[in-house]
Amino acid sequence: MCFENLKNLMAAFGVHFGSTSACLAVYKDGKTDVVANDLGDRVTPCIVAFTDHDQAVGSAAKQGKIRNAQNTVCNVKQILGRSSDDQILQQYMESSPVKMTLQDDEPVFKVEHKGQAKDVPPSKIAEAIYLRMLETARSHGDGDIHDSVLAVPCDFSEDQKQAISESANAAGFSVLRTVSEPVSALLSYDIGQTDNTLECNVLVFRIGGESTDVSIVKVQNGLYRVFCSQNSRAVAGSKFTDSLTDYLATEFYKKYKLDVKESRRSVKKLRLEADNVKHSLSTLGNAQCAVESLFEGVDFHCQVSRARFESLISPVVQLCPSLIDNLCTTADITKSDIQKVVMCGGGTKIPFVQKIITDSLPNAEILNSIPPDEVIAIGAAKQAAILTGSDETDIKVNFEQSEVECLKKSICVKAASESTCQLYPVFPALTPFPCRKHETVTLPSNQTSFKLELCECSNNNSVDADLGKLVMQDLPKSAVVSIVFHLRRDGSLHVTCKEASSEKTVSITVEVQS
Image (cartoon, rainbow, N blue to C red; front, side):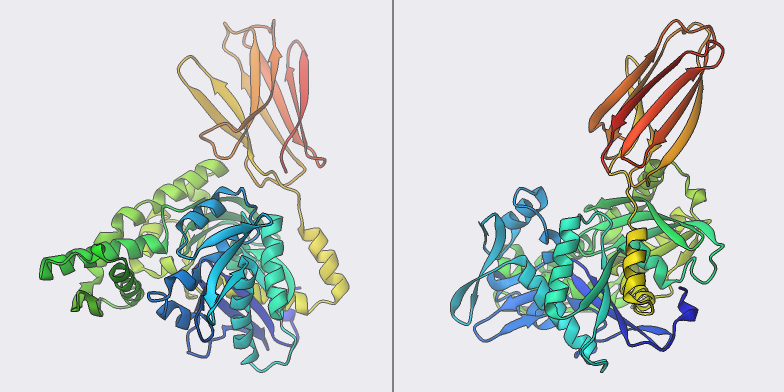
């Protein structure tokens, strides 16, 4: 069902719940747009604060973060649906300014609310944010039915998808489906939807508040396949803010000989203003930093140019081309094989970031006409419109058809010598079952044996697990070995090696992770 065939339906919503901000889009009467909240903002900070009087969500919680840090929860998306032994959850608990404990193996935030101690699980924090987004949806005036699609990261597990869906349902949204963020980004530009004969590779570059996701999506016959995806915490919006905060702290010291880093509260005040300056410099050539009573009663005023900001964040931004190179290596394609690039995430609003990515892929069409922090929500809204235009049976059937078993990790061939060990990818991670590949190897004239070692890798630089090996001996000179790799639908890998002239054959079947 294509977008132009949609009838005048009830409003369908797309919700993107990010680490630092959330965005709500609506599809109605053939148009998609982002719904602004009651403050007129098109994105809402994913922050929940507990005070003596009420529970604040969004900008109000963010503004009070400095004085109420021990009761203000941020970045809850990172830990939704994670088990107690998950390393990311453990790191979050160690660094969280809000006290956290485990109860029945589940994390809880220990906050003070209306003068009383309160235990709040992450799911309730997410529910509060979704409830805030629901209030925004209700302002659109379309009754009590709020059919929606949620956009989630590629690497979200089933438990994480279920946790985020349950929080949205508890808030009052009717969740039709979750869709991966890269796919949602493509839907926002109707790639492959208005022209289902289009075949291309699309790179989705998303810089969020806490991490960066780079994905390659194959488009064919109107269908999307997330071919490869990688996540990095080395590049993130928070890194840009950190760099600017350090610069402003240095300027304050030069001017007043006072070190704001002696006060944790002063650093938080300065970082909050640095975040505002960062956003301003995405559209303006200069921005004013103004903080009253920053440290020891001294007010701070400073002008920052875009050129200065770009020089400060340059070490982080210069990592972007290497992220693209690594992804292409993992996917076993070249940058010239990428025809389109979709920019999304607030970090890609910065012109300098856009230029670095564009220069890295000079032959690709850059798609950034939609505000990057709204792209994913808009795509989710279009997916919700398609589902809302189908009856309930169609939704269930299409959902079953859209679930394709894929490899969890890459399968590589190990080529070892006395000094090095090289890995050659046969099936990249996220390759759907079934799949078949054929390779031919010609041996040197002095070699009469052949060994093939198979392994699983999270990336192409390290081996996670050895799967098995095949050995052929007493082969003729200049032997030609034909290798067939068959990734079966049942989740097994069958490999057959056959030497052409002698017709010697060996085979092996191993189980792989799906």
